[in-house]
Structure formats: structure tokens, C-alpha cells
Image 1 (spheres, helix red, strand yellow):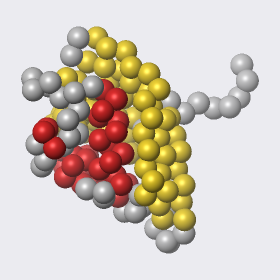
Image 2: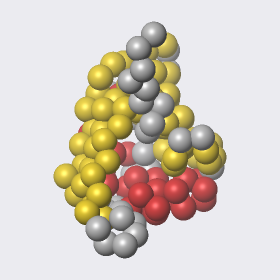
Image 3: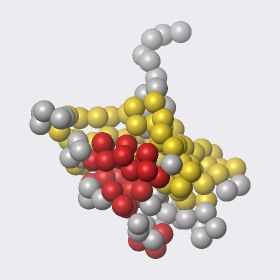
Image 4: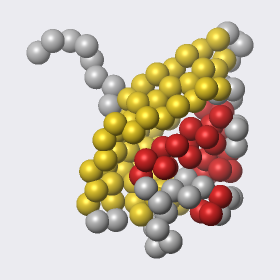
Length: 137
């Protein structure tokens, strides 16, 4: 696993940038280093996984899409002590299991935690949590 010095995530926005960079490099170990050991990830709407091994497997699934041109834009940050609630807009280009081109674009909601060394890690990462239905009220 990479050390925090390899991805200086001293601000929540930097954690989003580090995530996109690790996806673009197809670097599973770098991705895992961005998550707290007890983190929870939502790999698909309606399903969540917790802990390093389960997150490793879920992130491997994302990497199997051969992500390129991944971006993560920070839309909002609300800090509360050592925690931050963030909203993001993210996307990537890749390939589905059949090899056909795939484009994903979603809105995420994350809870981050500042660690003792001053870096931020994902505690809860829901890459689809900010998606909203386009139905009028």
C-alpha cells in the first residue's frame, strides 16, 4: 500500500483528485490507500461493501472496465471536525465486459475522515449517492 506521502491528501478535494489519478493509472494499491480500513463503498446502487478485502474486490471490478480519462470534480465540502461530507461529479471512459466502449458519469456523496497524519481518507464512498431522478415534484 502506498504511504500518505505518495498522495498528499491534506484537503478533501485532494482526495478526489488522488482517486481519479489512481484510476487513470489503473493502480489498485493506490486506490486502496485512499480508504480507511473500516470504510464502506457502494460499488453499485443498492449494494455496499465494507473492509479492505471487500473494497479491494469492488475496486478491481471498476478497474476491469479499463478506466481512462477519469475525473472527479468536488461540488461541495462540509467539514465537521475531523470529518467532511462531500459531493462530487465523476466520470470515466472504459470498456464493458464484452469490450464495447462504456462511458460512466454520476454524482457521488462521500464521508471523509482526517487521519492523525493530516491526510484524508474515505470512510463512506457512494459514487451514485448524488444521482437524482429527473422527475418533477
